[in-house]
Image 1 (spheres, rainbow, N blue to C red):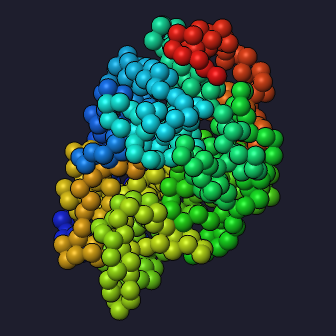
Image 2 (cartoon, rainbow, N blue to C red; image 1 turned 90 degrees about the vertical axis):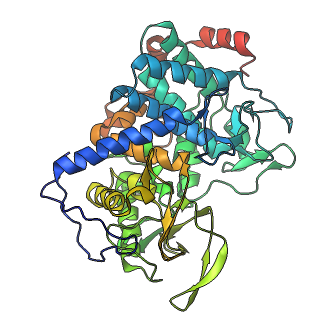
Length: 488
């Protein structure tokens, strides 16, 4: 990482944010010290904050309500990053991953409303501590299961050793992935439902329009057992909205997590589907434009919220200070707690709450803007915002004179920071995911070509090779099924 010149570090009150339009130059030594510290602190969140009876990751901390399967999906690659950076040994990481996958495989599955962890291969959004059963009446979540499986398949690609632990990780990963009935979740419709309740059936909302569900479609199309149909990707892209926002033409989606989650795993650089081929860009460039548009909106700050500027920006889903309406600069503003904040054409949800993961999850797309913002927020706000596990979830300088700072970390907001920082520095998670035959198969079925994908042999050939390389075949899968419960 080469970042030139020198930064002058000053201590400012939370409301004294500079409002210039320039990105300050950053000293390479200071920035490297910061990013190394940020990466290790964020890794420590995933290593420390876990429900040991189930090895699932807490949704948030220090407040504790339930675990989150999406947060677990982000924890799994974080363990790999920890091993590669020397925070833990490879054996320690493998042991943690193996315990996580073993528990997921053996967790209770079925259509009953009570006492279950999942059904038809999908998992419930949130799980109870200790038992890992469904939390209250949450949905069987198609997207959260997808984010979990993205982490699972990343571990399958990384742990390629010939010892018993790593062989079993690979076999369990295949088994967990192959039992998901993606096509069932369509409910005989062209698009996939967002979820299912045992009490009432499928959620009415479907996955349409550009958002975080790209990885869901790719996983579903790559399935060798219960795949989505051949036209699933074309149906998906037919619902896109391409428009200009703050001078950047791109497929719009307001909260930045929708531009980040899939690209934490899939390397979309220089590969194109039919839609992006016609536009002359790739999805990586689309996310770069979306990030810059989000930042430009915050710099413009049409509502006049306190503190917004070139290094205090970033709207995405996060906690917020409260649920009430107040006057801000003579205008009514509705403040919220957890909410999908964002800025795009036709979508403005902004109450003055800035979220560090909005910049952190966009580091590969906009490294100068994102790293500058994170460095600035850390140095300006100090331990109001940056503590034991890195950045707390969010802050709002308009809510009260001293500023509101969230007391919690959120697992799904910690994940993009560490994974995308590592991708920017080494490409580690992108490279691992690109090697996985299920992902290659899904991308090819969706019509992607170009770049690294063209250098890989056909998905069908890769599947055969992988069964040999990963020591996973139908006999082994059947053996795991017989030992741990029926696979299908």
